[in-house]
Image 1 (tube, rainbow, N blue to C red):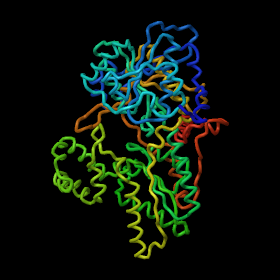
Image 2 (image 1 turned 120 degrees about the vertical axis):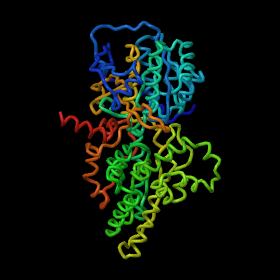
Image 3 (image 1 turned 90 degrees about the horizontal axis):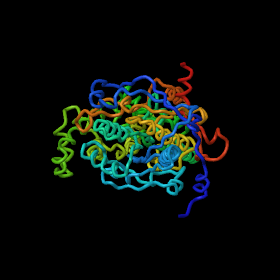
Length: 554
């Protein structure tokens, strides 16, 4: 296989580890935990894994040996995120250090590989090919949900056959919810199979006090910020286009906010703020149009607008409509599939409550149709298919034309549309993600060695040098609450939204009026892998601001 110069150079990079993980390690248990909400319901659903203590791994002076056969299985679940290969590399190195006879098996194409018994042994020669590389192509990923006893039993058959003691599931909030359900099932059955999760999602919405960030977020935001910076350089050169840029982030606006902090665009919409202010779609359009008009008054008929992909779901009226649509289509999918395409709009309107029918009827045909397209595996509308960037640009154009006719605007408004999603999911991981992911995998190995199950691997204090990072485990039940999915209440990991009273958003909010009127673009450039640490090893602006605020409050 032909490799690029970067691939060859990155293959030699040795990820950094927390100091405590370099020698003998001991487990220190903290206080018992409880779920994020709905304590009684979660405790009842997870009697064997609820209330477990937080775990911290510390350096130990005594020699600890683990002589048991230590076979482990690993699954990549859900969408790709930079650094997944390094989680597997860290896990491999960790279990081999604890017992050189240990084996690591990768299940092919996600959780479905476990159910279908499709796997491969990951040996040192395979692992070495994938260290510090992007993507999930070492074993592939998939979105099969692990939720039925039949699936769990099918998985157990192959785990028992291969002598696998533990299963590591690398995924986002839904995948780690599945990991927790699986851990509970195997614990209840006394099967002796441990399940450990690792926090993955570029969206950044899997985090809490113990999970500072999900892996891949750092790299993806740097990739997007580079391209946005390039567009802003072009924008400031040609001075004739407004660029509407949609960014990944269905359930939270972390990516849009982080990119805004890195590139200083003219406008960045934060979905959580739209919801908190009970803004309508027209309110959002008016907000953008006013900024466009203000810049035009200064002779600047160009600019950039960042839009989170999930914006539509955060507009309160749209959110209520989508919630009813999700429930209705979950219950009536068969009937809806037989309705002629030309009659689907009228059919939906006739089935909705009055207020939601009015909102649905007011939408452009293209948007209304996109709201009823195929659902994702969790029964939700696929908002990434809604061309929000085009919708907003068109609606802003209409509003500006009205203002022009009224003599309230005299600028020029030409647009370009972009959606940055897949471009960031499989990039070669930044030094931060390469180190963080390796430490997550290494930590998972020690959690397994110490008999833990139903935990997520945790590495904290990551704005400090890597040797000062803190490794441990957090019970997955600690992050859970009950939410409605496919018309039923289900236990799921609570998503972390952008907090409007937290340092990252407040820093952005304090400067956005200045950015909106002036041209103060920043051009981050491409990710740097070699060079001074202040260029190569910096974490996200979001994480730096959060940790600064945390330290100042102590």
